[in-house]
Image (cartoon, rainbow, N blue to C red; front, side):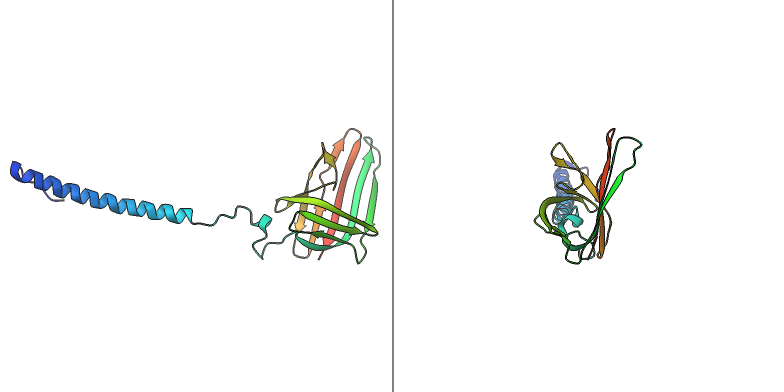
Length: 172
């Protein structure tokens, strides 16, 4: 930094030189700040890639799955033995999850279309799958979900009157 003379006639020249160098530094800082702000605002944001199915290395529920088994368990009353209902899938049975949030189902002679919504990469709500509370489908888990298989477990319904759950086994 330069030293200003103490003579009054030269003092105004020194102040002008100091203001000029300060302004140059401020402009440089302003350009750096603007460049950082622009680079931060241009980044793509994909907060949940599992829901958008944009990454080919992430297994997705979307697609046509062969039904291996559909089982449910229910017990009425506390301490009573429960019953298991099990349907073993036939070669032409399927659950076809589409990207329009619909799943087309064929189990034996039964055909059905249900709405579904991925909540996270491994949780899903399927209308009328498992049990419904106040008209809303409960959240089920997909565990595990791989490229070749998926197991969907409904939430357990535990009431004083009994218990109910459902599990779906799918393969590709």
